[in-house]
Structures are given as structure tokens and as C-alpha cells.
Image (cartoon, rainbow over all chains, first blue to last red; front, side):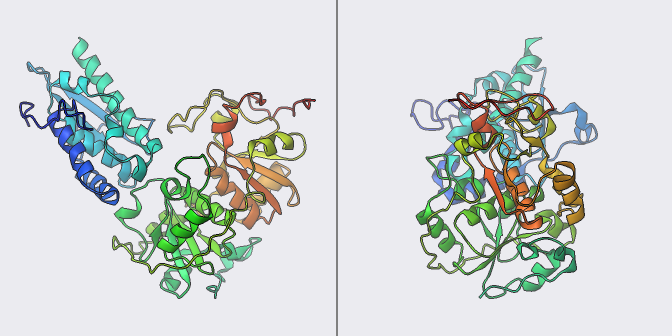
Length: 161
Length: 302
């Protein structure tokens, strides 16, 4: 995935404004369907969440818990030493927590492989732009905001050195 | 006509065994005329990953809470919901869910506010059903709409509001069903749960701490009656005739305890204070207590 495409709807004032292209596309996809279908879309992201690679699957203690979520989820970011400081995301959440897995799947697809600067620029209100407030409830969406905050903090720490 | 109750000896010892069904009973009665199975989970997507065949979904937040006022839906919205789920006023409703039936108990309590007569819990909930390798499906049911009547909610019998709780201090027992850390005031939310913004930590003065999960066995089913009595009437000294108010953080865990006291132990008057700590912990001019002791009722304000 490259960040050079112009999928983002910068300047349109829509919910995808100012987001990196992959994340903008996800936001637009959610808005393109009805509310019940948005739940199905979230479920697709839940199912599509990549499994942990063995180096983390065998060492769950390396991942950071996200207490803002109602279900147990752990996440970890890696930042490459390349010029862009490319970010990679890893999540672990049980199958009995599909909503939380869905949030993680959105962040994985929307942010993985981006330069650190772009991950840090993602606005904190992105989770409320998915059009899920009514179908999922703002209370539950807070967990996703918690995940994003932790991802950004980890990336900030990794790039500060 | 209501569906017959579960005659399982495992349930017979409870005060109101007709309020519970076993997994085996439910498996045998799926598809019975007049029976509607409802799944009610904390996770809003869990139902979509697989549910008991024919079960409909009722979400505590998006279906039962009013979207504007912090309250439950009104009679008209409840009637619309029931119709959409294929539930008639005389349907037998069996509710099950995740997390040892927290949310299922909460849904059952809301059905009670509307006076729905025959509503039962699946003992052990979703986890017990799955642990026995019973079948699940992702096929969405398409129930025929019903003509569920518009029934006004009757809050006074099983629901307490903050002024009721204030008036109750010193006059009757309160049960705080949150975690010990929430009770003492070390923290204002559940361990590993989102911060829901209470300004102060602690408990309502005079409330005894009985974390909800003490009523659940390892497998998520309810403990036997003798064990439950040892906790609530033995250790805590509650009596079946007492006027009891239970609370937690938003009223969901205390619905579980409300169910235990009302239907399993046969208490006559138990109310759930659903405003719970997210209201009390933020309210102006209400007293709280911190630490592990219940604390004293405050002197009456003249």
C-alpha cells in the first residue's frame, strides 16, 4: 500500500476528510451502506483481523492491553528503521469479542504500512466518523478511540529516540 | 398459552424455578409454539457470529435504551421492538447471553418493567450452550410481526431512582455488586473496563459489598440455593421480606443480582437502581463512603 494515492477526501468536508487513503476508503465504505449493513461490514473486519505472527503469538506479554475496551484486547506497534519510519500493527482479541476485533481490523487495514507521521496525524475523532454511533453506541466506540490513542503513543515513543 | 416450565430437578430448589430453563430443556423445546428465544449480549456483534437457531437479538443499548433521555424506551417503542422480534404479549420468552447472562438478566429486568409475564433465563447462558457443543447458526430469523400492545412501563416495583435511594439510607439494605476495588473507591470503573466518568470513587453509605459474580458458579450457571443463601442471608444478613436496593455502575450487573434475590431466593421487594454509580458518583449533594466498611447513613437534612 502506498500513501501516494488520493483516496482521502481532503477538502470535501465529509467524514473521510483528512484521513490517510486506506482509512478514508473504509470510512466511505461504511457510509455507503445502511446501518444494519454497517454491522455486517464491521463483522467482516472482525473476521479479517490478521492472526499474530509466531514471534508475538508465543509472547503475549509483549503486547499492551487496552482497558478502554470492554473485551480483552492487546496491541503492539513496530516502527521500521526506514526513511518513512513505516508502522506495522499487531492485535490480539478473542473470537467472543467480535466488535472489538472489528475495530482492530479497521485500524489494521487503515493504518498498517503507513509512515509514522501519517499515523500520528490521524485525528482522534476518527472512530466517531464511521457512522456506527447508532448501530454500535458511542460507549462501545470509546474502546476503538482507546486503541488508536495507544497506537499513536507507541509510535510517538518509537520515533522520539 | 405459555410453554410448560422446565421440570429439571436442578432448578426445583429455587424459589421460582419457572424463571429458569436448562440448556437441555431449551434444546428440546426450540420451535415450540409460543416460545421466542432472545439473545442479549454485551458485544453488539456476537449474535451475528452465530446464535441459537431461531433466536432473535435484543441489544441492551440500541434497542432497550432511549436514544435521547437516559432511560429505557417507552411503551410504544417497546411494542414496536416486540412486534419486530415476533414476540406477543403471551409469548414465553427465554433470554440468554454472554458474560454469565449479565445482559440477558438486564434485558429480562427491562421486560419486567413492561410487565411481560413469562420471561425466563437460560441457566449458564451462551457459554453453557457452547460448552455442550450445541448447534449455533448464522441464519437470520424473519419473525412475523405481532400486535404487541402498548403497555406503559411500571418502574415503581423493581426500579429505584436516586431520590428513592437517598430516602432508603438507614431504612433498608443496599447491595453494591461491583468489584471490591470499585466499592472501596480505589477505582471508579470495573477492572479492565472503560472509564465511564464517575467523579468520585466509593460506595453508597450503608451498602454491603457482594460482587455479582459470587452468585455464579465456575461454568456461569447460578450457584445452588443453599450456597446463595449462605452468601445473601447468612453472611450479609438479608431477609426475604426486606426492601432491598441493588446497584452497580450502570445497572447491568445489579440486574443479575436482582434476578438472584427475586427469582432464585424469593425476596418480595428488590429494586434495581440503574442510575447506579455513574449517577451517584457524580451527583451533587449526595453522600458517599470510601474504604471497605459500609459506613453510616447520613443525618437527615432538614
